[in-house]
Length: 172
Ligand code: HEC
Ligand code: HEC
Image 1 (cartoon, rainbow, N blue to C red):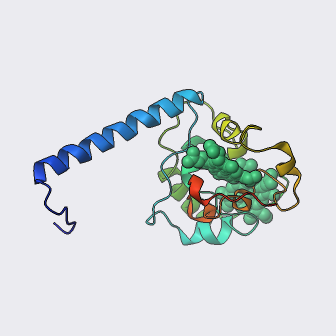
Image 2 (cartoon, protein in one colour):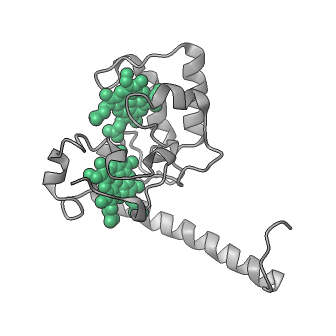
């Protein structure tokens, strides 16, 4: 074993690990219900990178983590790149295929709703997390924020798929 658990008896460690895993699945379920079945998936893992995606999908905005939307959404987004939110973001068939596979394979694993929104920012869970109680309406008018889709304006590690509360700084 490469990980050192100090003096914990091996059996106890596995029990704790199993408990930890099942609790987080239950929590994920509660969260998903609260947001009508919509929820982002696991935070991006260091292994979840794709050079083509970085190159083609992070020039106009940050590369949105695949876990932020369900697979059906990514298929829709990738199927309409010629009319992409008022921009033409078309790719060659081969590039499109590679990026779609990457996004679909790493899509949200907590999405139970039958919805496949094109925007992260239009989902119920996004609106709940970013309601006027959390963020005063004036913040959205700040030119440093511009759009709710500009995640990196507030989430300092957004590019890395990290939306942890400790890494949020609302621009003044
Ligand atoms: C030519 C510029 C451009 C490129 C390249 C581009 N996008 Fe976008 N994308 C946009 C614009 C503009 C918006 C709308 C931003 C806003 O509302 O502030 C957008 C929005 C999005 C949104 C919705 C954000 C929200 O509101 O939740 C997703 C998802 C997205 N893009 C995915 C992609 C993916 C995947 C790629 C790579 C295949 C890509 N984009 C490449 C311009 C681009
Ligand atoms: C104007 C600033 C701002 C922008 C822009 C913004 N967020 Fe947030 N976000 C926040 C704040 C503040 C919270 C904390 C809410 C809370 O305390 O529960 C939050 C919470 C979150 C959470 C929940 C974190 C957790 O641990 O519960 C996620 C996930 C998230 N945002 C993703 C995004 C994504 C994805 C985008 C872009 C598409 C985005 N945010 C854009 C300010 C912002």
